[in-house]
Length: 346
Figure (cartoon, rainbow, N blue to C red):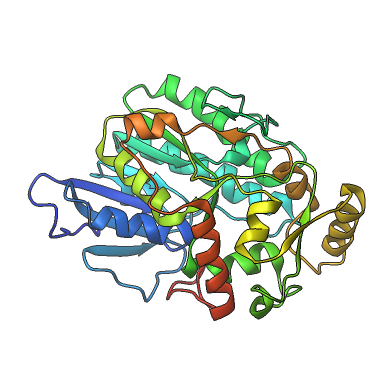
């Protein structure tokens, strides 16, 4: 396969893996997890812009998954697995643009996997694909995945779930795995995630005690998170294993206002939802914040996930708690942390 090299830890007969979208928050961690796995022989990272970051045993190639983009079959031929992570969060004011990459581009990846004869496809789905659900009990992978249709991110993730339902029927020789993680944080992703979700409205150096006196306690504000490296470990296990289907990924504890207040040495402050939502909507319309209020609405409705299947079938256990992942991310915000890749540049 073009661009494939041995990773030292693999040896003859090891797995050859292509990572699509290898330079972002998840991609950089997945590359690290794969290249250090003894069953993996080689890793090829695909990204629109080849990074200066050069981990041992990894080769890079420039590739655009958008319609009329680069030939993906050429890169996939000879691979044992393709991990598809490429996803565009912005611009939220131009949903057709994100649809072209996230849906049409993802379909191109899936079709190229089948055409190249790759036996395994590991697809990055999300908790955002789930339909609104309970906050008082966890749901397993059978919970409906129709998303929150007003939010482009959820709509696109849910559409890909429906596409993969049909894809698996048409390509029974492809082992398809759908990873559904909660919110993913690590120190090196702080600058990127600030650009994507918060913009410059909130000064990063103030995201620490005692500058955050209170955390808004809003109805429904309970969500799950995990460290990106822990999610990457699950991706690596899905590559080397023989599993199929969907896997929920999240760490304990679920994050609510009380837990976030503890992390920030602040206090929870009960607030009514309508004025907070109205303020966020106004800020988005004025382009003061890049995150859509529709995504905020979705977060308030996301179910809590049961991760028993990942524990039992992947042997997966997160090393970091959800609170530790957030603490590391907040430290990265204050330090303006990043990596030497285009998406993660500080």
